[in-house]
Each structure stands twice: as C-alpha cells, then as structure tokens.
Length: 104
Image (tube, rainbow, N blue to C red; front, side, top):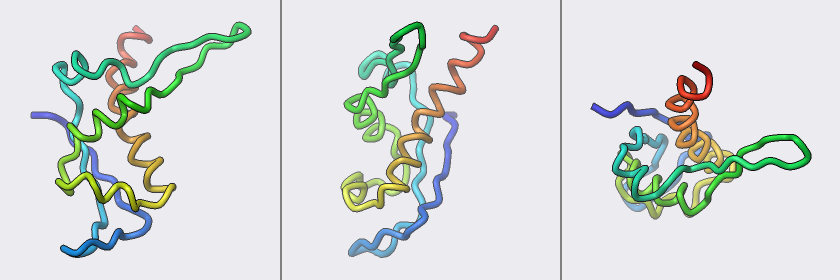
C-alpha cells in the first residue's frame, strides 16, 4: 500500500460541495516515475550544486497522486502558502526515497 501524507490547509477553500480543509497525497509509483520523469533536476553553477523543480512534472504527479479531494480544480484557488506546502509535500516523497541512494 502506498504511503500517504495529509496536508492541513491554512485557509479552508470554499466549494459548492463544502469547505476543503485538507489535501491527501499518495506516494508516487515507479510507473509514474517512468511516465513523468524526476520531479527535480540537479544543476551546478560556480561549483555549487542545486535542484531545479520541474513544474510540468509537479502538475502531472499532483493529478496522479491526489487522493482527497478528488477534484483537482480546487487547487486554482488555494492560497500561495498552501500551494507551496502541497508542492513541497509532493517533492518530499522524492527526497525521502532518494536519501538512502545518495547517502549510503
């Protein structure tokens, strides 16, 4: 069973069906990784390494990993703070999974 993470929204989001107060994301799968690629790309500049987030991959993973609510359209009206928290939570699945590989 895939792991899930629950994000409590800082501001409830009103919809015709009621307020959305949380978002649940499930862990991406190998199949998703094959379809969408890595969510981050490693880059280097001036001897410093850093990750660049692939926004298209984030969107694709969100469509596939959103458990609750099932309607992705509510994300359009979510405040910036919650949007960044949702994005960062999705990215954290990759960071946790990648840690044993990069830090043996």
